[in-house]
Length: 366
Image 1 (cartoon, rainbow, N blue to C red):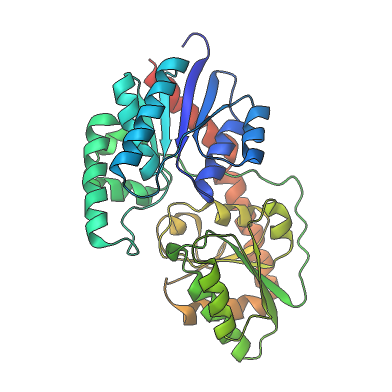
Image 2 (cartoon, rainbow, N blue to C red):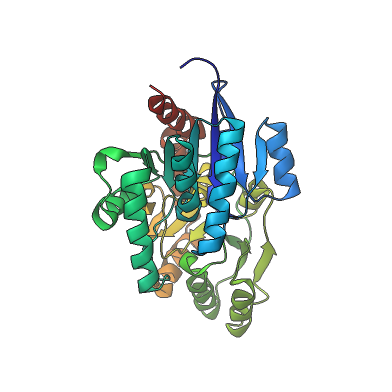
């Protein structure tokens, strides 16, 4: 590979882990590549990209399937690729990969497609899942050069549900920055927290129900539910209906997650569907005791009882019992947190993730 290769990252509007994932790739990039970013970002995020030497292109990619919107996005991406001389297009998530792969095909450049989450979770209507699966199968077979799955579970789904050839898929787990110094200082009362997009697949209503069950037992605690999304008002109303409004804080979008993780003792991820959640890895890197549901790629990270606790999804009672156990067993909380930290440091370091992604780019240019 001679000279610096231009790679265009493509993402639809997202407030979740996909954006964090891409920014990690860009912040830790090697000197072999020049990156561009196509999507929609805030002014502050655009400034961050500028400081990193990444060119930003404002491209509107609709959230749902929209013939007009997707064709417009495809044309915009095609023009960027051809005009700016991008040699690889890297699409993140199903929606970005719809116009992104077609634009790359028209421009005659190879495509990398990272699958971050399942498109088959139950909160999507059946007919939409079938349409999405057919589109996924067609585009991945004919218009995708390499697929990256962030977990083994997602790789299996791509093979079994969407007919993707196994040899086309590489599993590269998400990675996070490991804090230089982590001090574990228990709070009184215990602080329970989560950081998630307020969307149905995150199962935050089950967390609120579990917190209400704890409160009904007379357990003392505080809770912080960070994040934003379409269910924000609904979840706040549910907290009020459950009588725990005074115990739960909704701070909204958290610009500095490090401060959030320092404020809590137990991190909970009650998801119904997951790829390989970055927020869980971040929490573990801060030596927090974690409770998560046994879905998607989460069991690949958590060995229940060793570096965290797993509970069934959609089960507020099981979540309550896990919380009760950790609230009243400080030594278990601390030991789970220590082992969680070791797990992330050894297996989910961001530097490893970036290196593996760049190896994929180099392989496409041989």
